[in-house]
Length: 186
Length: 133
Image (tube, rainbow over the protein chains, first blue to last red):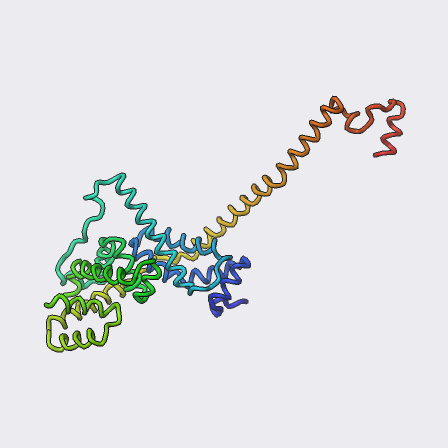
C-alpha cells in the first residue's frame, strides 16, 4: 500500500492530477492548519470560516492542472485563503448594510480585569474578538505577519502592497490590539 | 516616553533597523525602564496572538473530499450536456433536414418511399425485399 505521508507536495500534486483522491486528501490534511489559521484569524471560528477554508481547497482542486509549483504550496493556499476571506468580509459588510444599522454590527470586545483572564479559553476568546474588531486591512497584515510568520516583504507580496504600507498598518494594528488586549498584557 | 523611540521599538519587530537606529534603540533600552516594559508588552502581545489555537473543532478533510466528489459529478453532467450540444444536436438537425428534403422532393414519407419500393409492381415486392434486405 502507498505511503502518501512520505511523499513530497509536488509528487502528491502530480498524483492528484491523475485523479488520485487519496493524494489530494493528504495535501488537504497537510495544509488544513495553515489555511484554518488564516481564515479563522480573518473571519473568527464560525461556519463562514469553515466554508471558506473548504472553498480554498476546492479552488486549489480546480486549478490543480495549472499548478506549476513556482510558489510553495503553503504560500499559494494562503494567498487564496486571504483573498477568499477578504471577499467574505465584503459580503458580510454588504449584508450588515442591508439588515442592520451600522452601530449594531460589530460591538467592541468587553474588557475586564486581568485577573479574570487566567482561564485560557477566555484569553482565546478575547484575542479572537480583538482580531475581529480591527479593520480588515489591518487584520490581514496581522494574520500574515504575526500568525503565519511571513516576513514583512512576503506579507507585502501576498497582499500586493508596498512594504511601507504593510509596516504602517502593522504599527497601527499593534497599537489598537495593545489597547484591546490590555488585560492580557499588564 | 519618546514617541520616536516607541516607533523604533515597534518597527524593530517587523524590519531590519539600520546600524544607527539599532544603536539608538539599544542605548535607550539600557537606560529606560519604561521602554523596556513596552518591549515586554509588545512581545507578550505577539505571543498572545500567535499562541491561540486557530483550528476547527473537526478536520475538514472529509468534507472537502465530499465536495470534490460532487464537483466531479457536476463536471461529468456538464460534459454530457456539452457533448449532447456539440454532437447529438447537429446530428439531429442534419437528420431533420434530410427528412424535410425527402418530404419535399419525394412528396411524402411512406414506407414505400423509405424502402425504395415506391415504383415497384406489388407482385415483385416480396422478391425485392428478399433480395435487398
